[in-house]
Length: 89
Image 1 (tube, helix red, strand yellow):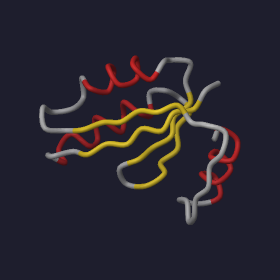
Image 2 (cartoon, helix red, strand yellow; image 1 turned 90 degrees about the vertical axis):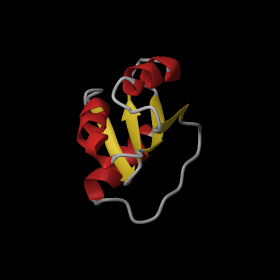
Image 3 (cartoon, rainbow, N blue to C red; image 1 turned 135 degrees about the horizontal axis):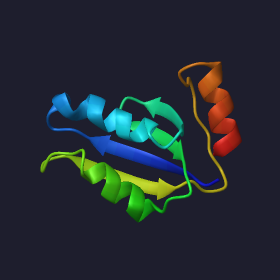
Image 4 (tube, rainbow, N blue to C red; image 1 turned 180 degrees about the vertical axis):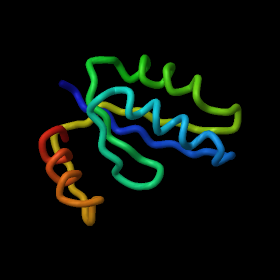
């Protein structure tokens, strides 16, 4: 299943929980850092963006990109996340 990187900026942190629940709704997910998550889904980048846009305010930003063939990171949020990133990215 394809993996996508979703990066976002929230002007009002009150929407954070709703957005994170939206990301978790894809089933396969892994936080990369505070404002960047990886998700696994058969949806397209446009479908993901459109779904998550409904959870954002007018001043918020979102960026969705399908992961490529190479990835590197340092200090993930633990072994579980390291394992997820290795498998899907």
